Image 1 (tube, rainbow, N blue to C red):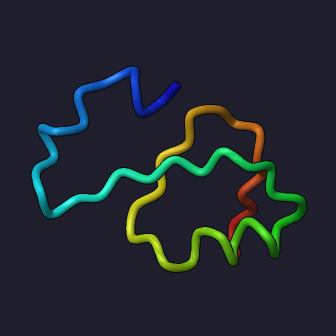
Image 2 (spheres, one colour):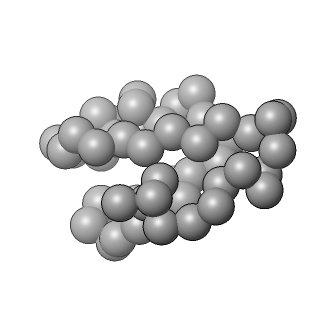
Image 3 (cartoon, rainbow, N blue to C red):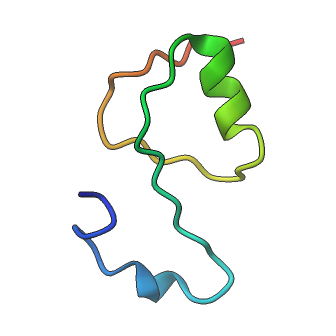
Length: 52
């Protein structure tokens, strides 16, 4: 859905858009899955992201 809802090509060749579609159970799994990304954009607020 997110990859089809906008024209991501305007970001240029230096940006890779990746959609994570699997459910990630727990804060540690979420942190591990996102650790290598510089920018995270959430489509919905289903995943809690507590400040630390």
